[in-house]
Image (cartoon, rainbow, N blue to C red; front, side, top):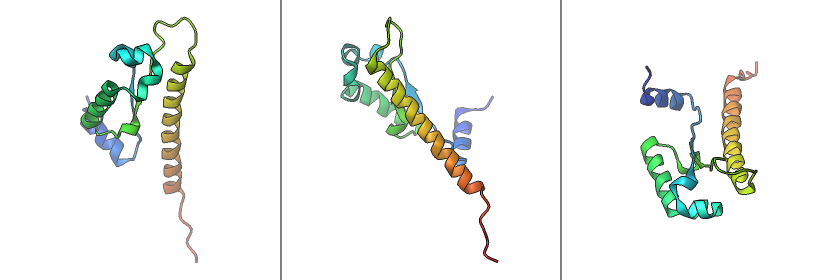
Length: 112
């Protein structure tokens, strides 16, 4: 079995982007449960995200809070916004990684 530290070393050596998706934020914080728009105002969540950051070495912008659809019967714009924001950021990290890989793999032209 490969340890997390070994995986982290491989990811870092190859510049593979890493993110942490923090789920069930409404269950962790009453303030967010009452109003999802408080997600970026919550001191509790910010503290938890900082703990994740210090424990994993990930910068705060790579720790993405989302609320799961667990008790809702229909789509909620605020929940969708958080999920889509996280997905967009993950895709942007992936695109940046692919562009960087392409740039490094394309042979450099020599002027002969």
